[in-house]
Image (cartoon, rainbow over all chains, first blue to last red; front, top):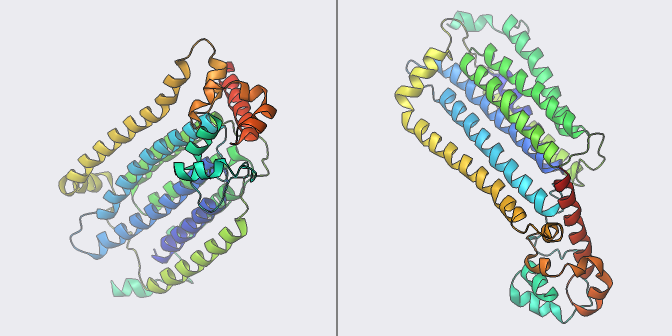
Length: 138
Length: 242
């Protein structure tokens, strides 16, 4: 088999996953796209391992071993990722990653009024908007 | 070997190549639908097609053990886990118009540029490279197991530690908020209605009922405070109903 077939297919799958990671809004869809990217890498590893195991005399089958490791790490990643997404959904009521902007710099949240000139230095002194919000409403 | 290589060519593909190409087209199409569909549950189901197609590709590359591991772990557990995640985050069942974010066109440009560059480089680099699929299978279970337990034992064991850490981490992440949820049993609706990101809002359940009073007196973010608390209470009610 020509080596370009699996290589091109894995490149296309990787770019599909890349588009999904960049364009999707739901966190679980982003996780699905990450899975696609990991699978593209797996296909590359398997194809090159099959090629090398015939081209070289003595190989460690490192491609297939690394593929197994990648599958296991992807399973762990999806478990942790879903736990984080569920925790975020429980706290915020949304799994929309566009709305999780607490640590964004330069973008004040829309809900903050500009009229509170008194509370603004207190927030900046507190260092983060969240503690400042808590102090201002206490 | 050289004679066999000269017999190859793009214009006379072998049966394995044709099968690989067809399954690859199905896989790529399913992946495209996965990242573009507006229905969230359908995305997970198309992901099954894409991952199953990849398992067939592994079989065509004579990597049988990887193929069955792919079927067992990805199709069997990861997609089910993703579907559980979609259900638990109350994903809309029908078409959701806001599945894609606003930077979709920038993402499309980036993905197309990356695809063009990668395909060009890969096709140019491996234009004259052929995989010899004849003879004993390179990825049979015997070969994979022998190499895994002869040469890769230490990473294998380290991986088990990583899986244990991931297991414990997932349990801790899902369990912490639940303990907090069940600790105030009396007025749990108001108490759990406050999101933990605003720590002292549970002392002020009035803020939910009187957002206007908060607008004048407190200098913070009273308007969203009300909506945030109300949203939290709503989710607490839904969780109570569950």
